[in-house]
Image 1 (tube, rainbow, N blue to C red):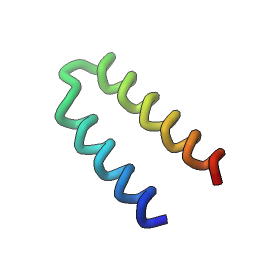
Image 2: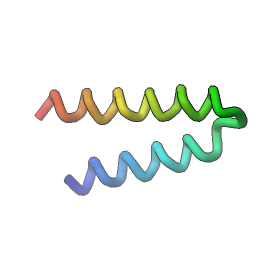
Image 3: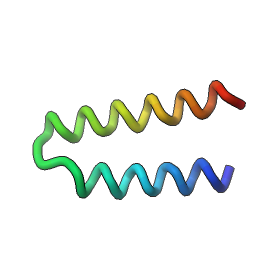
Amino acid sequence: MTKLITLLAVLAAFTLCGCNTLEGIGKDVKKAGQTVEEAAKKK
């Protein structure tokens, strides 16, 4: 659980730093959601 929280925090930091437009934010949020979903499926 701690690893997942750490992963989400890192993804959030990259999301906030890496996108300059609303379209970019949407893509980053979608990618973060997919990553979390994949992590949940592995457990």
